[in-house]
Length: 232
Image (cartoon, rainbow, N blue to C red; front, side):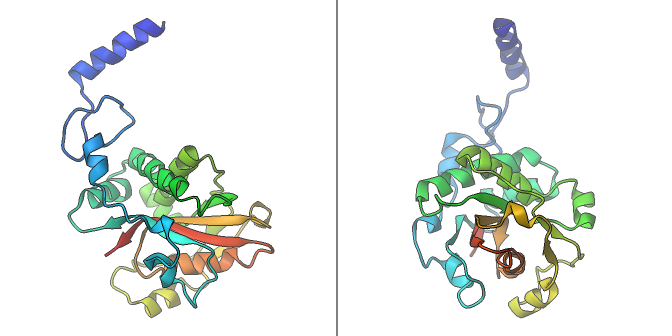
């Protein structure tokens, strides 16, 4: 049976080759979206390795965060932006799992986040979730959990108010819009735990601040924040 399956896989690969989303070259492993060369070209930030990195500084005086960082830099017209667009707007859910695994590998490499107990993705409100069909942060969290072997809690925090796009708002306006949007729905999943809050791209940090503010109200929680990318 195994030999037959391998033969069929080889035959399918011959007629329908799996290609890199970056450069179009053939990729043998069908779960890999990028070839090794393109993976190496992704702009690592190395923020997870260092305290007082730019992401941690975003939350100074705003939210008591143990550690924070982003795996990559986010540039316009870059390969990473292409992958994020695939994830958020093109229905490519496999991009979320794949990027999450790369993300998780960077968290594991840092050692600063080793005592994290549970990963919590920033939730989408029901309207956006219905329109998109999935929460991109939850897919990233799933990939992180698989690579890093940490549990994920998708239902511990809920987002019950619809908010318009935050793209063109300043930090204060974004915070005012996000205030009161998030509510902890399963405190027992977070109580007395080090929670790692996950999102895709960080700009002002208003969404993460609002979500994190609800999490730290749970007794005994310690909060850290990590995103796939940091906008420069």
